[in-house]
Image 1 (cartoon, one colour):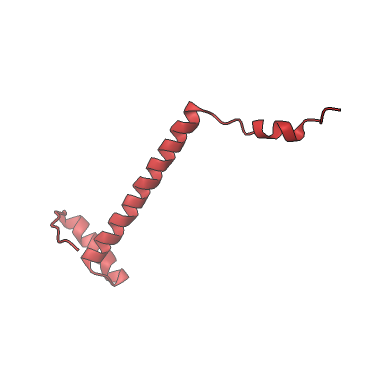
Image 2 (cartoon, one colour; image 1 turned 45 degrees about the horizontal axis):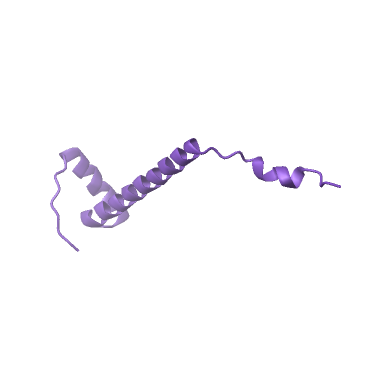
Amino acid sequence: METVQIVLDAELLEAADRVARRRRVNRSALVREALRAYLKVLATAERERRDRRGYENRPADEFDIWDKVAAWPDE
């Protein structure tokens, strides 16, 4: 692990300390947990953005795949 220094305003630090006490973890553990959660949110948002862009570029017609199944066979 690496040691880093961050600057927090007093209100944010107090709120973080309250949560850390309730969760029975230290500040570092709380910050690590919060950062992991935030990075996960960002990664999910990026995947959703890429998916949305892909569907906008090539919309999928969900019913196209059923055309062959729903069509009557040639006699």
